[in-house]
Image (spheres, rainbow, N blue to C red):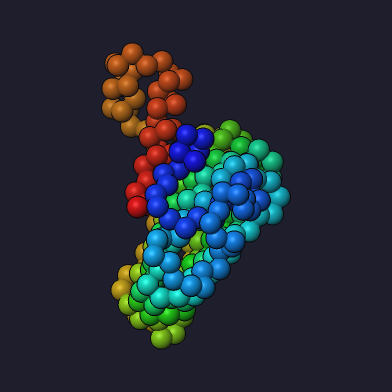
Length: 223
């Protein structure tokens, strides 16, 4: 996974999807419903090229379980990716990094639902928006009643071509007092001092663009 998709792996129970299709030969679990405790964390990996409607439902139904989500996708045709995460496991934690490259039309929706107290869902979403692309990104955090002391954070950042169109749509529905509940959205733009530094090191204009793109894509801290 590291060589092909630059996804870090570690000792874990795995659930792997490639191009939107479940890969049993790369997985140690048979799905994304977590109904028993594992000594190792669960690592859900969703990689490749997508088109059309794609959905990923993740249900954490046991306490004290750690779940990591690594998503690295691109689309060259219109695509819709829907991710729904329900954390119903007290003291269970879900951390996700979602890296998207859009070269067409992309609609992305993620929902993070807390149905037990002391649950955590942290999602970092990054987008590279290509020339002439259209991206609509939405994230909803839902904290149900009697779910105190939860931690919720959904963040979006994008690096875009000047001709790309992007729409961010954050939402929160909070029915209990959380420990923290955050949302963020930002556009990444290389600074002149960064560009000048790379050019002074002998990089061409195209090489500078590639370096800034790689830096943006790899600036994750999931584990």
